Structures are given as C-alpha cells and as structure tokens.
Length: 406
Figure 1 (tube, rainbow, N blue to C red):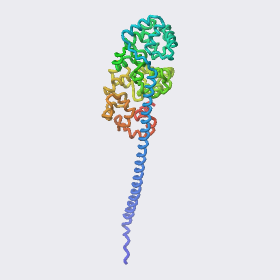
Figure 2 (cartoon, rainbow, N blue to C red; figure 1 turned 45 degrees about the horizontal axis):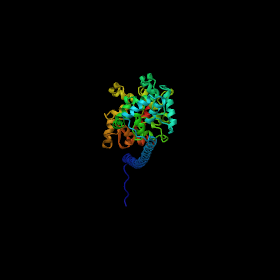
Figure 3 (tube, rainbow, N blue to C red; figure 1 turned 90 degrees about the horizontal axis):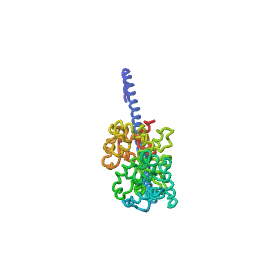
C-alpha cells in the first residue's frame, strides 16, 4: 500500500493554526458545558430558595393570623368581663338625677361617677364610693389621676373654664363636657368616635367615653384613628379584666414597646425621641409634638414628606398620619417616598378590599402578592437577596426604608 505524502512544509503554519483553533473550540465546548451545569445548579438553588421563602412566609403569615384571632377573642372576653351589667340609657330623667346628685356633696357626685360605670374600681361598692368621693373632694387638682380613661391634667389644660370652676374634672365631663364634644383623653378622639358610633350614642344618650368603656371596647371599636384596639390586643395578653387597652398602653404597654396601630412602630419611633423625653408614651409624644418635629411613626410613613407633598394638608394644620388614614389614602396620596400608593392599588386590583388601607394591606400580606410594590422595586429579587426578612416579619419596602435611614 502506498503511503500518503506528508503535507508540504509551506502548509505547516496553516495546520498548526487549525489544530490550535480545534483545541480552542474543544476548550470552549467544555466551558459551555460547565456554564450550563452552573446555570442549572443556580436554577435549582433559586428554586430551593424560593421554596424556603414561601415556607417561611407561610409560617409567618399563619402565625400572625393565629395571634390576631387569639387577640380578638381575648380582647372581647376581657371587655365583656369588665363591662358593667347595667345597660343604662341616659335619658332626660337620668340626666336630671345626675344633676341633683352632683349638687349633693362629694358622695352624691361619687354616685354620678359610679352610675356612669367609667371608674375602674375593686367591685366593692362601698369601698369604691369612698374612693371616688375622696377624688371629688380634691376637685380640680391636675396632679390627681382618677381610675378611668381620663387624663385630668390634659383635660384641665385643654379646658381652662373647667380649671377656673374648680369642680372635679371627671364629674364635669360626665355631666357637661362629654355632651359638648370635649375629649377626655389625648388618645380618645371625640369627633372620630362620635362619627363611627353616632347611632348607638343617640340611642343610649351616654357620653362617648361611657359608651366606649361599657360597650365599644368589647366590640373592638377604636377610640382614636391611631389606636387599633384589635391590633393592640394582639400584643397585650396581660390586659386584665377591668382595664381598657388604652389605659393599659399608657400605664405599661408603651414601656414594653407595644404598638397601638399597624402604622405606628414603637421601636422605630422611640429611637427618634430625645433621650430626656423617653419616659413619655411614644404615641402621646407623637400626637402632642412629635409630628410637628418631623418624627416618623413608621419606616414607610414620612410626615415631613407628606406635608411637603400635600400643601393643603399642611395648611389645614392637621396631624398627617391620621389624615392619611382617614382621607389621604382614599384620595390616592402616598405615605412617603418609598411607597407609591396608586401603583400598589393598581397592582393589587380587585384583591384589595375597598375599605382596606393600601399601606396596611401591604404590610399584612399584600407585599407578597404583587411583583412590584413600587415601580422598579421587584419583590422576588429583593427577597432573594434578603431571604431573612420573611422570617423577621418585615416586608421588602419596609426593610429597604430602614436601611436607607441608617
């Protein structure tokens, strides 16, 4: 057999180059296969991560729902145990009786307060009457605090005519002030409560405070736009029969960093308060001065931004978070720079209940139902980068806003 001739020497460079190209192609093929393997592994890892996130989220939401259900039951039970058995109707005759008793000395005035059922006593009638009578005899002393959801010093400050009259402020509220639209406490908004319970107040004829303490609290009716009875009850299992949740918050709940509303983050707000003022309940501080100083009640609500963005609200001089809850959200106003409310409402579509505040909805599950809560902020990508936030109970935008504030 004839042997094939060797390639001419002139072709050696071409052959060498071809072999180099072939080797390069083989190397690229190997790298491509390796890259495909890496991509496959990444897809598997991503699927596992998403499964873990879904599981964590399901656990967090399930636990939260269970806690809220238990809180509702506990709050109702406590309220019913405390509620006076007498379902009195304060008609013209009843008011006349109160007027006569109020002029019959300290024990007569004590009977007026006892009849209203707003005094948080021991249940021993004679003992409680003596205690109430002692309170009445101290008249308009701003340092005296009755056992009720009634801030005496604040009431006297807001109503100089009561201070000059010298009568016991709680007695004044029950016989006159409550019917004149005067609020008994900075965390009890008279106009807000009247607006939501007008029919019942008209039927019973009692003051808003008496209605709340007798019936409203047990029925989970909120006394203020920024105090959600159900929400607070879910964090305060130690509210004892005989004590309303607002009094519990003022007495001890605030010191436990309990939150009075889904849009009031106790830890977040307290960290902004001046050190020398941190003996004041945060919600009281916010309502009385904090919002004017630009302190933020929640990472996703910026009061300064809100007032600058909506000059009509600023000109009205109203507290911005309450405005957002009562009117702003329904008008399509965003709560801050991080949460685009119209975008979120459009993304949620029909799944968003008509009476549901969009930001509250986002914080309580809606965050996981939309691809982008704000334009250019993909939920899944942020979750993949920060998988711990689901287990920590934070939403992506909330976590982002906290990071930006550092």
